[in-house]
Image 1: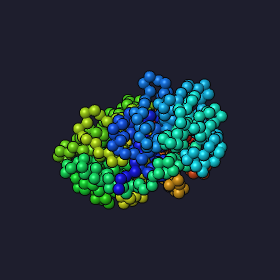
Image 2: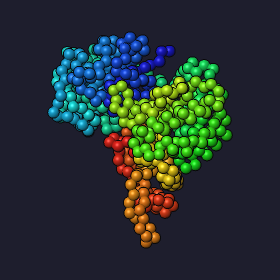
Image 3: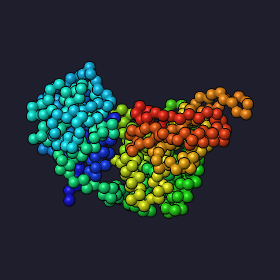
Image 4: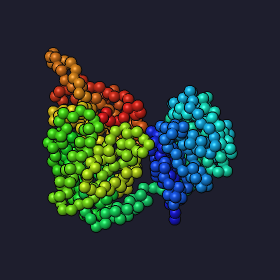
Length: 510
């Protein structure tokens, strides 16, 4: 049976990865592809639907991204979102202008007539807008489906050609009925069944890994985090003892982490596990470095160099497994998206790396990775571990990293994690950790003056790590954590709590 596929053409918008995730939530398999994918490749892949994403460019710019317009005459349903809608209008004979009435944020949408895209959706309904350009006139054959106070063409459709456009973002939660819009496009307009699940993904990836590596040995950079653990389990399912896992203690791990990883994977999961103690090597390379991008790239390169050194001891190894997931790829910058931060396993890889990468989770979101881990039989202890950045505490010790600062942060972070667990909140919070900033402040302890570091606590709720809200921790829990950190961690005299959402902030500080 031919697999249902929706292609998401990426024009570089900040919410684009959410579109793919929302489509998968509806049990439809989709892939995000570059906006300039060839028409021949689109035809060959036989998509059942195509979505054009938002993007930061203006359709009027000389070098603005455009897809092959023949896509619009394939007979395959198309949904243009924000920039995608404007491009659809421009390519088919409508006009787009720069508007002085820029819309950003929550807006009330009035639905003029019930096209299939708005089936069972209330009017008015709240949507999320983010655009400067606006459509001035629609192409022949299109009808106006919805308006807002500042946007007379907030949604349109050509029912005969199955072409639809919305100026708002249905993929974000601020659009209250956005999932209904996507559901209507996929099931009412594209006529899909919604029969994809992660079991299909496992069987396909197992075959893909076997084809890629053949009978050669494969090295896995195992951090003990969710992503690398699930990647290791999936590759192990595919090739068994051909896989050798290397755990590198870079001196930037959480307190007790190395011991737990060695115990779990070496003893309990019976994988080939090599332990590399490289803390001094990493810390010496980071001495004096303050810029977060430089730190990430240094850590990324050193990981590869350690893997290369360990590989030489094991004989010829051509492949390296990494737990890269989709948000890592997006945030590290794509053809059209701006780089938010380089992830050590994406933007921080050295050009002369000796391995070919195996990245089986590259197109999955974090919640999908957790679900996959459960399907692969991993323990909840591993599947529900706290997300941890590849560079470790190297990007939670802000600016210069020193052994003294790492020790302070390890102790403070351990108390935070312990008290969150004691309060029974570990499953309710997406991520929680401590950050050590470079400044000091005056305090008083035992009637004496102190001049010590503050600790910043960060806890967020999220579905996918692409957007996040700060977690409303109970005051009594924050009080216990703050008291313990100040009393038990040498070098700390103040505790603060970060209540910034993402966006505008990121989850990590660096």
